[in-house]
Image (cartoon, rainbow, N blue to C red; front, side):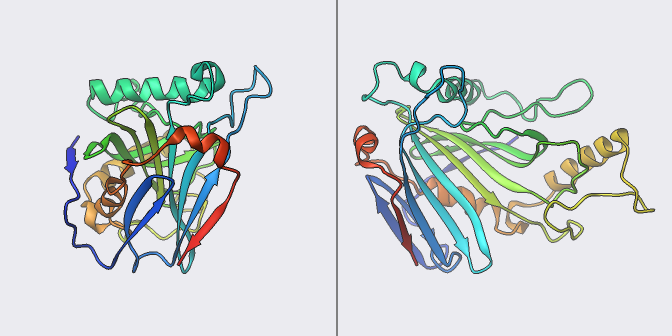
Length: 272
């Protein structure tokens, strides 16, 4: 496990462009992304008291694209909504997940934590992924100028298919601002040249082209976790430290999240 501190006073990482929207700013490498879409996502209320999914306050979303398509996204969730009497009651899943993540970042246990059979315990996320973290690698804590977080390579699944590592690999950062005013969720598709080529959602098979049994598939996953753990951040596409710098460039000096609730209506702005 590694802890990294990222401070952005001056950064030399290509042609830089700074975006500022609703009091939130970030700096990115314009030569790496063909466009960025900024979405002012409107508040989603809890219509059914028993339904905790897809309930969230108004939030700000940055979506990054390359010429080949979607590359990743960063979402900023306000954690203190003055427009509701009880934030925990209004956004029960967000409040619960934030509490678990804050505790992890305070305690900083060695990662990954594992069950007796070697399966990694899931790392808490702000958003309900409605899927299982069945593969985890390159887990580490990060310290930014504006807060702290946890980063990890992950693959999610909603079924029991034997997905190949690399078929749906992404780098994820879950973070909380120092003031506990904002939560940040970043997801970026990544690849590594040493991984066997596989199509999106491709399956891993044995030498005869047959599906692996459960035991063999679990051995494969644990072996691939160790394999990628041994790879440098800089060898991934895009480099993992490149994504860390992008998230670390966030600034919240003028963000008034209380105004987001009444202002945000789903507006989309594209920057090319």
